[in-house]
Every structure is written in C-alpha cells, then in structure tokens.
Image (cartoon, rainbow, N blue to C red; front, side):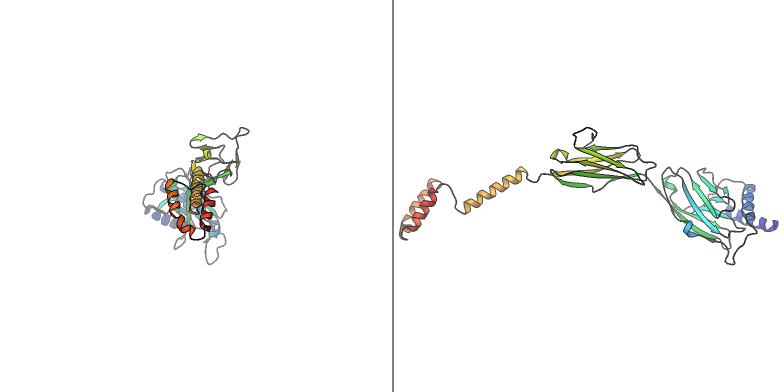
Length: 311
C-alpha cells in the first residue's frame, strides 16, 4: 500500500512540476496532500466504470466583483483518487486535494472528509478572475470538467431610454433597475438636468417608490407633465453607477401649429371667393369692364356678383 501511494504521489508531483507558472508549496507539503487524498475512503466501493463527475452539481458560477465565488466539483466513487483545480487560461495549478497551491491567498481549497464536493473558493473577486477553471481527477487518463466563472459588476438601467416622448398633461413614469449590487442600495437619488429632485414635499406632484428584492427598482412619477419637465433624468444609486434618460414633453397644440392652421383656413376662403368686400380699386375696374358681358346674359350674373360683393 505504501509503495502504491508513493507511486501516485511521485506521478502527480512530476505532473505539477511540469506545469508552467506554478508557485508556492514544498515537496513535503505536496506529498502529504496527495497521501491524504489517496487515503480517504481507500477501501470504499468503486464500480467498474470508475469515478465520474456529477456535472449537474458542478455547474457554471456567476458572482459579482468583491464577493466570494464558490466553484464546486462533485465526484462520485472517488476512492483513492486525487482532485485538483487549475485555471485553464494560463494552466496555473491552484489546489491539490485540500492543499492550496498558489501564493494568491484569495484562492482556497475546501473539502470535508467523506464529502463528494471539492470546492474552490475565490475571495474578493476581481474582473480578471473570470474565465474557465478545470477540475481534474487523477484517473488514467485524467478526468476533467470545466466550470466557467462569470464576474459581474453593479449596473443601473433606466428603462425605455435613451429617449422618451410624453404628451403634455400626461404622467411621466420612469423605472430604474439596479442589478448585481453587493447589497440593496440604502438610497437612490433622482436628478433632473443635474438638479436633485425633491419629492418629499406635499404638493410637489412628484413621487418615488423603491422596492428591494433580488434586484432593486425605483419608480419616479410626475403626475402632470409640462414643458418645464423636459430634460435629462438621472437615477443615481448609492452602490451602483448612475444612468440617464432624456424626456421630451410635447404640447398637443403648439402656437406654430395653430398659426399654420389659421393661415390655411384663410387661403381656402380666398380660393372659394368668400370675401367680405370687392377688394382693391383694380378689382372694381375689372368688374365694371365685365358688365356688358354680364348684361347680355339677362342681368342674372350681374345681380349675383353685386349680391356677393355686398354680403
């Protein structure tokens, strides 16, 4: 038994020494970690198929910056085998058994005796920690499983942007969504064109409702929008970056539209000949020149023209 353990330990030690960019640990510590892993459950039952990795309980992980990520590798029937974790992007060996084999003390190997779960904990996550991590079992050939770590940062989004158009007199209803915050924001401020909005005073016509859950939402409500309410609105949580939206309040009957409508109506009346007076002296002369032709028609047209001019 001692010869078998020594052979396994030497084989793994040689493999470790061949990995580039590996730091920390002495030969004695590595051999002790390997012997400990090999001794655990060495007399247990192993099916002919050998150990295998339960991928369902060894899934990908998403964690936010500054938090702790826990990567799990569940291995069934691991009798006499050793588990290690490696960062795949640079082949940096991180753990062997319960031994953490890196100088970065943010990484920690965690395993309880008799458990099927071999954990890799990464404290104080940084964005550069994202990527694939490989769990390896010392079978022949080695059994491997990749766990992807996604590192997210707090984000703020005002829904409906970047521009929102509102009719004058309607309500402005803005929703701000805060995701991946390390904790629910203790406060969320709203700004209009850089000025802090006051929504605690009675009669301001502004309300804010904030709700906390997996994500935090804050709703800004302005009951009757007017032209002065146009501009940039910014949602600024305490634990996430700010985000803005541009609001445009549109008047349904602007002065320009009314003027255009009146001008059109006057033009239409002129085209129909509905004038309140005959017009200029030139128009009167032209009318008198047409009298002989109108009289030849029995005078009916002349009477009609004179009637219209007096109307």
